[in-house]
Image (cartoon, rainbow, N blue to C red; front, side, top):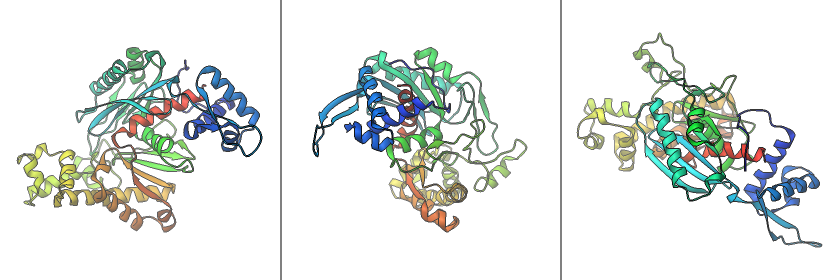
Length: 405
């Protein structure tokens, strides 16, 4: 299967919309009859039959067993041929980078996880390329059938995937990388590549692969630093791809002032200040097992120890998560009032804090949102955890593959 160059947010032709609609229904509901496809897509049966026949000739769809009939000829069921193509997704998370290789039904065939350095740089991008190359090399599939690569990475990405700017937290200078991420991947792998913001990828992945298809408006909170926004089932990127950055900053603001407004309008750390909160209280003499975990060297305290502390019922670690939930909950309440989403997904790694964080967020959103929005919204942890970004970009590539079928 050969696909054209993949372009985000381009206007789909009528044929591409029909391709996407029919194949998504087959992927989610197959084996399924042509009549049922027609009902779910609201396309006439002749159109559906013509399109499905084309997919069968291409090997993208296969015919299966006959369906039960209420009378007359039994309808033939069709389903996606998962081995018709494969997709690689690479996602960058707070503490790790993940690569997955999936078939066209989005079954994960292989997966690799690596710890990542706490930095944003060109070096990180090259490590992601290495990870993609590694999973392709080790894959026990026909490599000629790998039809696309998706890359999910934090930051503001231009529409061509050729530059990226990483907004930094708490008064630090932003970092820009001008070398093309898309070109770097395509030259190394010789496979068409899409580059997407991590939160945008994750919100589409949660919707396309996890949630009920009736959910049309949702927000994915990627830790506390950004969010993916889905409006009427489409990613909202804004005028030039900068939508979803959660917080304001000024090059003229002092770091002290940036700290002061972090819980209000400002930017903050990926862990919503949990490590800083715990460190400050330990320094003031508050007892905690967190100190023992780093052998008294608080400079080595990380989010990983916070998670471990919560699991071991450390009072300070739990308090840090609850405080972070209150702080993030107020920002989410603002978003809930502004956008009135049906679902807010908590992800990017902070969901590992469990109920200590999530319950605090829910209670805060309920307290600070208008009643109509607060009673409507569901606040849930990411269904895919560390894999959310990688699977999200896989979903974006799969939609492109289906549209061009």
